[in-house]
Image (cartoon, rainbow, N blue to C red):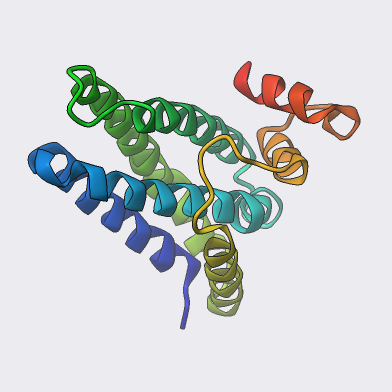
Length: 181
């Protein structure tokens, strides 16, 4: 069984474990940050591609999905800034704290609002089917970096966020529209 809710929550726990390493073991930052980045980006892309559209249509989580999509975009920007900072630089700590707080806020909201809706409104077979799609999508996106979305991925994000007229926008316009949410 590959229940999508369980898979998402397992990723959340792994992200929290990596946060702990980054915060408490500075000598491991250079190796841990790429691992965190790979997991975070792949997880976000998989949620956006597979989970959020279903949460909107089948679990009536429209507002929560739009909000979660905005939080993903914000967290990716923070992650890009963190990755551009040397782990030994004095500003690394504050950038790490900002990223951790943003992601933890997102995780708390998702686990208290979106995921219970999926568990309540989708049957076991549908959550299993969605879990398989999520896992396959996450695997496909491993290794992608923040800010490297394709136009198609940006269109999915725009739909998830409820942005009108996204289909007619350029990649740059989509990026700007998502940032101004």
